[in-house]
Length: 183
Image 1 (cartoon, rainbow, N blue to C red):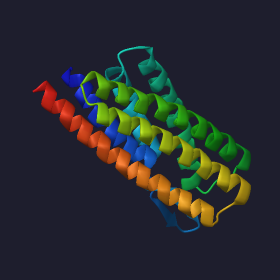
Image 2: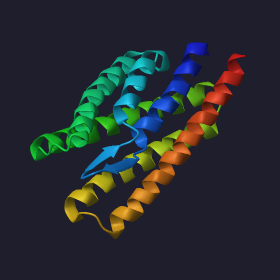
Image 3: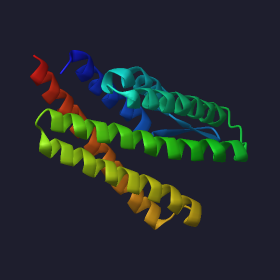
């Protein structure tokens, strides 16, 4: 285990805080995300090559950069309260699909890393988190599209944030375990 890999896991943890958590603030008649996702995508693009030792690192880096641009454009449009429904729909759809692919690659790789370092329980946890996150994230979007805001969406959002906080906690602990193995 190289120290650069441990550093990349820690940077992934910080990046996922920006990507996964949304703290929307209302400023006048516009809503702005106080924790912009594009910062997380930038951090993830930087960490990707040290986190992955194969071509998947390049894929995650490219996906992160595409998501960075889409997220930055959405953030700017929201900040200046510019409503272009078609552009917002395209950017949201692009973000959804690429985010799910990227999360799959990250959590599958973290599970593989856990197995390689003789941490089978952590590997199982990362795979379970991956499945739960992908299912609730996709279900949340579909619920919003099909039914609008409602009780089901509130429940799914609460479940999704529970998974997010748990995944961040587990990645932080995993980085600590890896760091202990390097020393």
